[in-house]
Amino acid sequence: MPPYFETIKSFADVPITSDGIDTKSFLEALDGLVMMFDLFASRAFSYLQADIIKNIDVVRNWYQSHESSSRKLETLVEDEVSSDPTSIKRKDSARACLVRLIRGLSLLCKALQHMQEDKSAELRVCFRKSYDSVMKDHHSFITRSLVHIALFAMPRRQYFYEVIAQGSSEEKIDTEMAHWVDGASIIVERMTKFLADGGFGEV
Image (cartoon, rainbow, N blue to C red; front, top):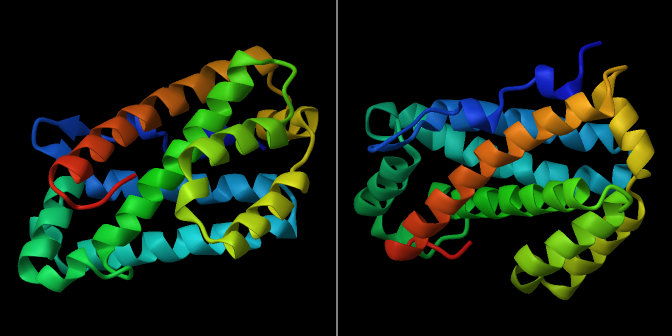
């Protein structure tokens, strides 16, 4: 079995032009992100994984039914809001789901960055720092409690690396992970600004 980062589409390979971020490629990269939760080997993550899948499905359904006007993430949001002004307030809109996906991607980026900056830090510590800075204020007490349970159920750092490496060296995996994180971070930064400037949502 090849290393994890060789089996998925990297966010670094998602086309970005002056017109925006390619929607189809972004969704394909998100599909790979969902697979990462399987590597944690814990049922505690089933709630979070299911929520991400649901948000992806809503955005993908809008894209597939409005493909000509939604080829870029930015135009997808603008198209939905212009065609249905009430979507700016709905939590089940493609816009709202995209905001949550960008927020989740931001959390994952920061957690993996913490891992690479501190070679001795365990996953639960890295993800806890990231969660507290990115998502904690957006969640209810119940959701925060579920997240904390999931964090305590995270595997040890060494196990995680062994699973994603599949025999490859840690140095190679760190390089591939950094490439993935860098690509995702660019998307997060760009979409965070676009959503905030347009009044479409806060990441």
